[in-house]
Structure formats: C-alpha cells, structure tokens
Length: 390
Image 1 (tube, rainbow, N blue to C red):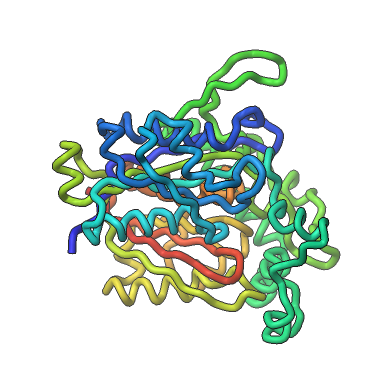
Image 2 (image 1 turned 90 degrees about the vertical axis):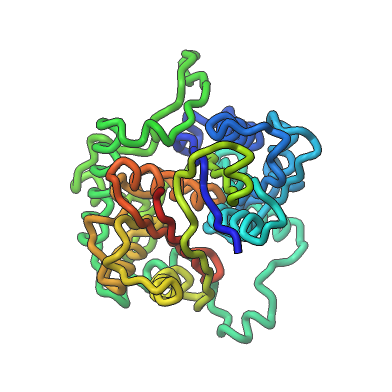
C-alpha cells in the first residue's frame, strides 16, 4: 500500500466571535486556504483530485456542501469535486483521514483536506435549533433515549463529569487555562506560529485595513485572578468560559499526496501519516474517548507514549487534556506546546487540520520526529493521528 504524505499545511489565525473575521464568508475563508495550499505545494490546480472539508454547522452560509462551494470560490477548476464531513469537532481530522486513505489506496494521488467554521456567522447549535423551532423534530429520538436513560447529550455536562471523575477542582482547571494563554502568547511573540498562518485582509471596526495574522483569542495579559473571576457555567460546577475553548472563526487545511503525487509535484514532504484511527465511546460522558482511543492507537501503531515527541490534544474543556495526561502518563511539557483552544480558539469543523498544521510546524521548529493528535468529539468519539516529520 502506498504511503500518505503531507506536503503543505496552513491555517488562518483565529478570530473571536464578532471579531476580526466577522466579515469573512466561511466559503471565502476556505477558498483562501485552498489557494494557499496550492501555492505552497507548487501544484497545478488541475492536479488536485478532490477537496474534503470538515464543518460542524452545515447550515446557512455553510450549507449545501460547503466543500464544493469552497472549490467554486477558489482557484481550482470546476472539474475538481468537493465533499463535506461532519464528525463534530473531529470533522477536519476525519477529512485528513479520508484524504490519506484515498491516496494510500491509489485511487487518487493529490487531495486537499481541511475544515472551516464561522461561529460568528453560523452560531453553534444552529443546525439543530432551527428545525426544532419549526417543529421538525430532533435527532435525539425515543430509541436513543431508551438506550441511554433519557440523559441529555451535553458537552458541558460531560466536561463536569470528567472533572469529577478525575478529581479536578476549579483551581486546577484555571491553572491549566492560564498555562495555555502563556504558551500561546510566548509562541506568538517568538514568531513560532508565523509560518503556519495565512494572513487575511480585514477591515477593523474602526475602518482600518489590516492583515489578520495573530490569533485574536490570546490574552497576553492573562492572570489567574482574571481567569478565576469568570462566572461558572453551572452552580456548583467547575467549568467556566475561561477554562473552556473559545468560540472562534477560522479555516485550515493540508495537502495530502502519495509517492506518485510527490513525483508529479516535485515537492518535499513535510510529514508522513504513520497511523490513523477513530473510536466511539459513551455519548453521555462524551469527551473522554481520546483516552481509550490513544491507548488503542499506540498499540495498533506498535509504539509507546514516550516515543511520541509532541502531542496536540484539543482543549475543548480543561479536564479533557488533563485527564488524557493522567491516563496516558505523557510528559506534560510535550503537550500543546504553543497553547491550545482555550487560548487560540476552537473553530469546530476546522480544528482537526488546524491542530495538525500546528503540530507539523512545531515538530519542524524543534527538530522532533513523531507527533500525535487527538480530540474529543460530539456523540462520544475520538480520532487519533500519528505523523512522522520528514
């Protein structure tokens, strides 16, 4: 079987809800990423055989196969197809897996995988809230309720359950959140994320034309006092908006090729896909599946946790990466070395290739070899991807 290589990886800087990317249509954000991937890889646009994009809120501006619309808004020819993936927060990571599987099978040689989410223009929960408002029903049907005891499927409840199970109090979660901001601020000041970011033209609320090239969510002046002052999401709980991921606008993508694709492009690969898998778990707790998924992935890959140089574990809520560290015994100094979604934002359907872009560039900056990425996903799932820097 052929190998799968990543030859280009790029992301936009994150934008806060109603912030610097508010005027960017999600289709145009995705198209900008696609065009940049083609440019960085030195590819002929006609050589791209498919575009696979993750997106969670596939409604309104992100509806009607957002991946195909991104193709039509990009510099790719209209003969290039596109398809959209929804594996909740792991949508873009799954898009990467599908692209890798396509080139490994030999049915395609050059595929773009990515993700997009404008949480400003298409608010979270819109795909389910609108139909319910119109009386069109809910995905949460009677059969599912019978199986799981009519317990609501809620990421917020799941985060609280994980914190309670592993014994994390608010102080521990807030300290982790502060560390995320500190790492993101330091990486930004040192220019460590500049190479992975595609600057976008924006106009500020003051009418000034600028380039958006710094993640808007980073609190450069964050303190434990400011984080701990944020109101808890539920009385008696430990989760607040400050120790959870930020609502975010953004797009990201990677170009995936096999050996034939490398030859056609004449490109040098950034990384090789070493392992990819996905696992399901309890949809009520929902967010703890990365723990078991990582254990399973390492076993399937024939590796130990100590052989992995860097980890990207999505900071959907602080208890998730903390529980992952406790479960795996991984070195915390190798985790989310440039900060995570608590500081940088979590643009839902884009986060999979966003984290992969950061991981690949971080491996290169540090001269490291192996990286592992995983994230919790709605419905109780988790993807795991292991890459080798080349």
